[in-house]
Image (cartoon, rainbow, N blue to C red; front, side, top):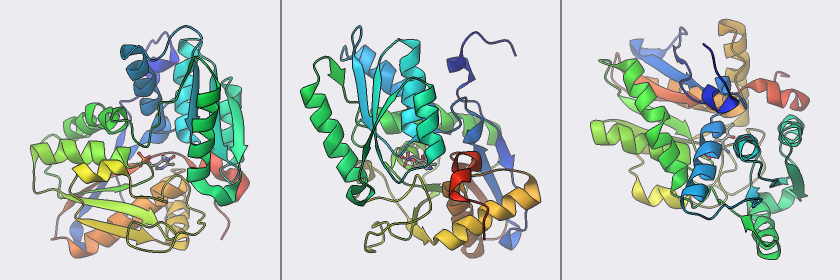
Length: 304
Ligand code: PMP
């Protein structure tokens, strides 16, 4: 494959038919988003957010892009902004991985850290105040921008549908951070087959199932407020996965399949396996592996 720039490497990632022990003779198909050039599913979002800002004439020459992020959206945005020579400021709570912050800086972005105890809400507030202070700046705001779910509706969902062709999907299982991935893909699948069950995944410490918010090791998923996108989508079940269960799957997939998946992927797999126990025999479960474990090595992702 001959390509001319990095943006051509985004998307069309492999879908793996997992060869592991799955209850009730079911199959689990996982989309391997680590194969995007910035290493995660959020490269797709970075492209869409910048393109959307350009289309709506909210981005001009030299506009500074400002965004609160757990890291992967920051990397995706920095990658897309580079193409248009746009300066980028990413507001990241301190707790998020060292490697992701290094990658954002390598792409030319500036990082503003906010205290971990203020969570993503603290980063959102700081990004808003920077945007108010800085003329010619643009805040895509992934948490409310309809371009977020639209990204996945238009790209990853049809890719999965094409790869599976005649294999009917029983359930779709995905982690929720901003909720964009879950909402966009679920909407596409349900438009084509309203019987597909939509299963959202969160770590313990996230509030979707009514739990108290607290810190967790699983990175990239978990919410401090109900994602506004969830108003427009049917959620059949939300599964809350412990850090221990997510990290167990991270280790197991490396050992059994030679795949280095991140902790949100581990949680998605743990939830998919739980679903396989309750769904009819020979179900087909589709899930998303958003990134790789290599960007969490400093957090000892493989340590027991
Ligand atoms: N997994 C990882 C590793 C992520 O970085 C993110 C985005 N924060 C997600 C899952 C969740 O994606 P979304 O924001 O679309 O819900």
